[in-house]
Image (tube, rainbow, N blue to C red; front, side, top):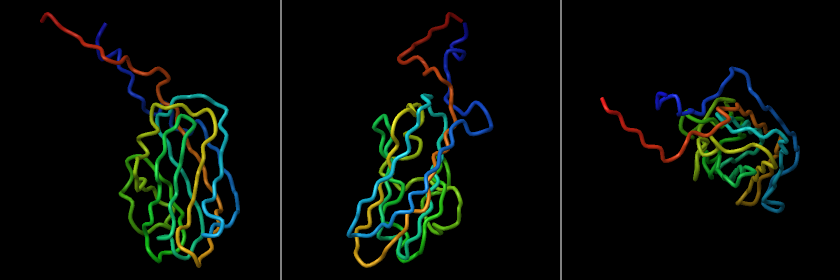
Length: 171
């Protein structure tokens, strides 16, 4: 066999989303009740080839907010880290390989996570279990509403590539 046949690149196998789950918590976010967490329970167990996370919330000063996503496998990524200053509202699709995290934040457009961590960190990890989104408002005075969030997951190759292989050729 050809060595390249042994490598399974974990890319999305189909054009459609394999897992799409949304929640509409509708809960207030402010410093008095911060942090606020919500979870999505995924019962399917697949390896992630690609993941997008939709976040839709209303807040008059998004520079007050941090948004973190934790997977059932223990991967944690900060989606939003006190960026945006006095801009209102977050309506984004956090996506691997998207544009850098920068204004505008209410465009509905794809954007990379601000970090620490990156959306790529979820690739090749499992989906099954609770996914937790935590939003913290670190400054008093403004009230937000956590309207909606979604996980859009494309299953990649379901067998991890062999690790630590070496190959030689005689020609």
